Amino acid sequence: MASTPDGSVNYPLCTTPEPGGWQQVVPGVLWIRLSLPFQLDHINVWALDGGAAGWTLVDCGLGDPRSRAVWEGLLRDPLGGRPVERVVATHFHPDHIGAAAWLVERTGAGFATSLTEWLFARTLSAGHDAAADAVVEGFYRRCGLDEEALASLLARKGAYSRGVPAVPATLTRLRAGDRLPVGDRDWTVIGGSGHTAEPVSLHRPADAAGPDLLISGDQILPRISPNISVWPSEPDADPLADYLASLEGWNALPADTLVLPSHGRPFHGLHGRAGELARHHAERLAEIESLCVEPQTAATVTRALFPRPLDPQQMLFAVGEAVAHLNHLIGKGRLERLAGRHDGMPAADLYRRPDVTGPA
Ligand SMILES: [Zn+2]
Image (cartoon, rainbow, N blue to C red; front, side, top):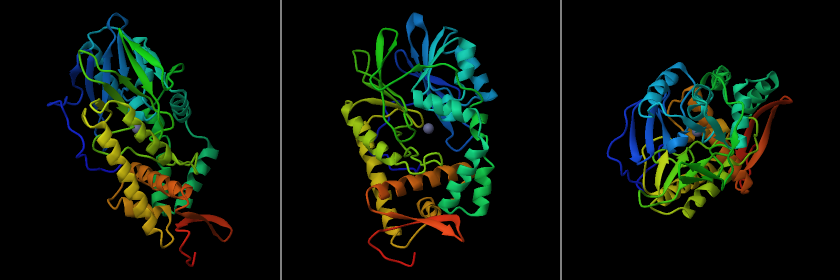
């Protein structure tokens, strides 16, 4: 979730759609831009023309009244009132899946994503139980957040279901390697992991009409590093290992693939960008390792990595990202975690280099 140098990419399209607007990327592939009411500012969604079968929409924005009003306009123009065959969600995050249930009901479209992303969305949209609330509070206490930060995070309860009031009740399950026919062209599902557990990307090989296309979701973005976070439900996870493996996987696609990302602009430079993001994480890991010469909490590591003021949503992603890097370093044997206890109660965990002996 940090801004990173994007010197390895270039942007072949000269213009960018206005919020709620659209433009053609290649014949049969439309780039639609939806605005978002938070710092991310916008999301790109992609409309793939399947001819008589109708449109395939990839991602769809938040499930709020404003998005629905914009979609009503888009269904008329540029989609021309023609059928929508399916809505694909690249992953369960609200800006990608929020309007899916409404669109499916409104248009009669099918819905497709991976099983894991669908289950996450269904579970989170259904709301929290009290046991989960206690787990969330315990996790962030062990991260060392102060009472004020803790209170503002806990006050976000229900934020997911506000962005995603409903999730389609049935799905067509997408798995890595599946072929997704759109008109007379096939897109191939590319798997991966890291930003979420089982995101879906779509690749279409080059032909006479245009270059290789990759709809990448949030797994690779041109200007920001996708958030890689550990969440309270799986506190020992190492999503960064998954993400770094996924970055290497992009080398299997042609170097001149035109990448259609969820945020930012379509870009060339897939391999260079993957390398840039891998270096960004390697630098972060080294930075954290040197900080942990002195024992640190996840909160102090977060403040070192993200020194700017953070709103509660940004804080959630920032702490999650810090823990993702800490867990990765533990997995590599480069750090150790000392479980925090104070008067028999859980307190902030400390992280330190195993080769440094200190008071902790
Ligand atoms: Zn996302």
